[in-house]
Each structure stands twice: as C-alpha cells, then as structure tokens.
Length: 171
Image 1 (spheres, rainbow, N blue to C red):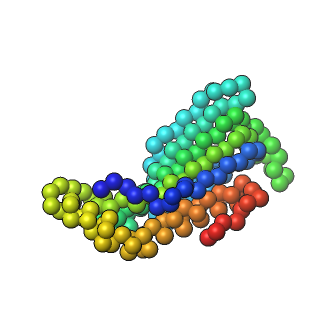
Image 2 (cartoon, rainbow, N blue to C red):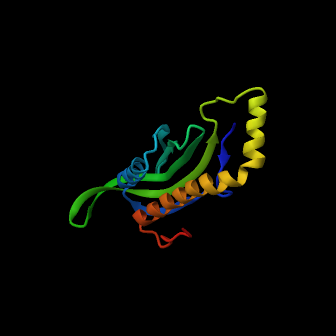
Image 3 (cartoon, one colour):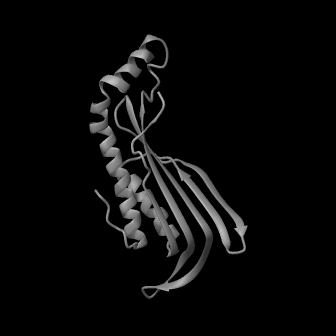
C-alpha cells in the first residue's frame, strides 16, 4: 500500500538571516535520535549557484517502525539559498555562522503493510478495504495524530532555535 499523507498542508519554516547551520543540523539529528527514528540522508547537494552564495539542499527521510504493520516516515527537506559561512563572535566565543534564505519542509506520512505481507490477491483487496473504509478513523486517531504532533513539535523546536518571532504553534 502506498504511504498516506497525515496533514493536508505540510509544516514548513522560512527564514532569512544569520543562523548556525551546524547547530540546526545537530538539533534535527538529536530530535530524531530521541524519538528512535532510523535516519537516512537521501540527498546532499552543495552547488555554487550565484555570486551571492551557494545553494544547499538536504533531503532526510527518517523512519520509525511503530508496529509490524505500520511505519512512520517524516521527510525533511532543507534548502538554503545564497548560503555563505563566516566566522563571528557569538556570546564571547568565535563560531562559524551561516547567512542565507532557509526553507525547511516537514512531510509526515504513514505506511501500512511495510513488510509487504499482503501485497497481492484477495489479501491485498481485503487489506485495502479494512484500511481505507472500516478502520480509517481508528488509524487516524491512533497513528496520524501522534505523527502530526511530532511534525509540529519539530517545526516549533526549529523555530525556537532560529529565534523566530512566531515560535509558538497550535500544539
């Protein structure tokens, strides 16, 4: 069965200014490690796009096996435009900081039958009927909400790290 999107609109963060890119990366990694997600980095691109700075793109796909039937996926897409790194004195110590336009998109998805036990024949038809029709509300309450709260929690932690004005979320 294909993955189901949990939220109608994906949580994202847009930021322009000076930030600590290494600290941001460590924050996301620690958040994933605390929740025991298996981590995979699909894309890491750094290209010289313009005289204003580089273009940096990261695509992370962490997974969490919740049950033998259900698996969580959170796709984290990080793009930085006009990316420049320089040394600066922050709180009395010399640090490497970054400047640019930052875009982070968090896409939570739920995958059913991730072990592919019911992939063909009558079992596949029955599984689709059960998931899409009979137990849909049960799965939404039990699994979708948990993953949605996790996605919004990550978004809020990133906003706090970047010291944005809109650091509060609905959750």
